[in-house]
Length: 229
Image 1 (cartoon, rainbow, N blue to C red):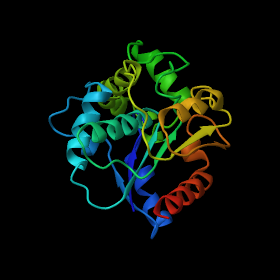
Image 2 (cartoon, rainbow, N blue to C red):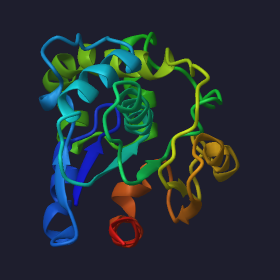
Image 3 (tube, one colour):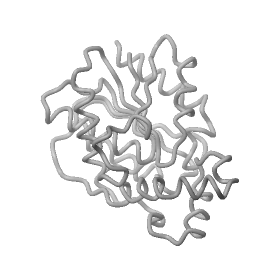
Image 4 (tube, helix red, strand yellow):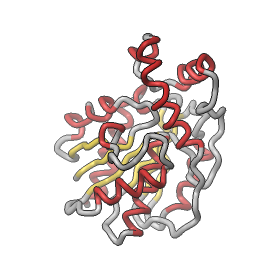
């Protein structure tokens, strides 16, 4: 099965590509990050615009596939699944939503997109998940800042549009110490599918996906195996 991974804002695609060997032969990992963003979609485009463009790319997919998204990536994965349905194309066999509250709920925590530079990077550091080499280099931060701000602006500007729930199973992964996406705000993901739903807690903060990778991969592998069955 193909596993399409949707990274978080500022997320290093290498984190997800490193899963390929761990998940083989159960899944072939493909990352839909900044490097694969359709050229017709601007960096600051709304989540729904990016999802629509990604759905156009994926609608010809023949084999079974699953989606996994973390933080902003969870929203993009969810909206891409909705867009595939609206275009009359097959959707994912399962959706794994990690580290983001249910789509219809507001996200807790401060908004980062329009903060002054110093404060912006302070908050990014506290949030975690950004490559150390970026955080330690002023020159790299200066280059990365516009694109990273655009991704936060897309996430913070997202507004859920009511519609029919998905019909695929949904697995929600929540960090036990994640105040950005606590378990009680991830449980309502169950409202967005008529299929099976499961909420799993993973030890760690907002970026438990990197802090506790082995636990995350065990959950992903189990879910993909169930989807194939």
